[in-house]
Image (tube, rainbow over all chains, first blue to last red; front, side, top):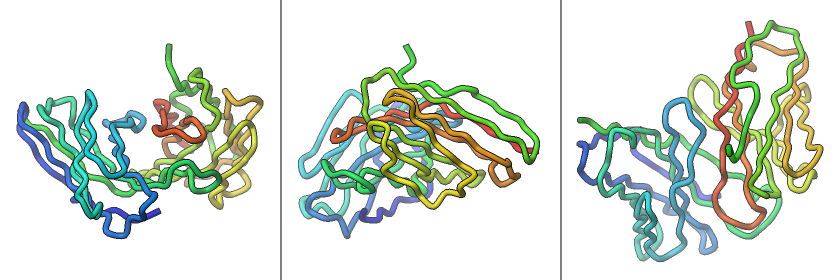
Length: 114
Length: 112
């Protein structure tokens, strides 16, 4: 799986948009970009994923650059409960064996301040 | 209903003991995983089972033995516990070819 680079920490004011960047310059054509988050003492939670196009769901939006070398996770109106470590992961899809493992890096600690 | 449930939530035990952690998922997923999160908060995959077959074993000491009686259950048995085994262990499940892992809430193991 391609490696990702994320800032170790970010701050955001409550109610404002949180934009979390991720670099994945060595991503392959068949690798998806996934975002997970881990709120303190809980299990990681799936947020969103995408291949080329921008994606949006009820939790967040994912913006992937045209060259696919970087992406941004957007939480449109951050709340205190969004304080968590956010992980950007790239992974192949639809294949078996060890390719299925989700490899977590260090992630970005997002702190939402009142 | 809890999608991925682990028991126990907390486990404190002495060095040298043998313990088990149980995991069950009711999502109909066919693949299950065990992850370990150490004190530095790194999440590392340990094992993965697909339809009761071991597909990933990440050079985990053989004191750790996963057991999958059916595709809804993946238990982790640990022999001869060591201090370094203290960590939070997360179970997860997914469908073989679809996105999104669902994680359990974790089991905090403390070896004293």
